[in-house]
Amino acid sequence: MSYNHENLIVGCGNILYKDDGLGPEVINYMKEHNIEFPGDTHLIDGATSAPHYIFTLPEDKWKNIIIIDIAELQSKPGHIEVLEVDEVKESDRYMDVHGMSVTYPLHDLADNINIKLIVCQPEDVPLEMEMGLSETLENKIPEIVELTKKTLDEMIQK
Image 1: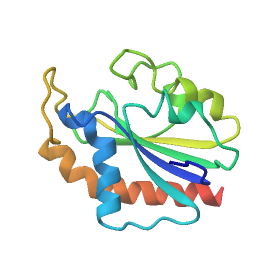
Image 2 (image 1 turned 60 degrees about the horizontal axis):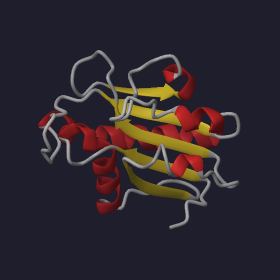
Image 3 (image 1 turned 135 degrees about the vertical axis):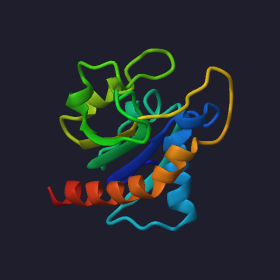
């Protein structure tokens, strides 16, 4: 599959661990509901491989990337924030299951590409496999979709 598009919207996370699957679930919702985005925009279910695969193989055409995932925001479940890559640089609140910063390859890309992270405080990420989002995060999907559309519009206008 080619990721050679100007705008990428990437849902990251593991659907086997409840709320950790938020990113892929948002991407699936967008596809199922035929949500339209401006310009040359491609939706990607990045699952758990996005930071270690997609973002380490950049394309010249990339202009804007939006990443949708959960993050430890020290807030109530369902709280949503839009972050810049440099806002997460010195923080450990956006880590993958191996304790490695998911933003690692993004810092190299941020000099040439506009990157935003739309993150949500999870309610339940169990230690054992359990599929399906918590009701709290399931109910946040339409809000995340609208925020993604607004954020991409702002990035394109920039």
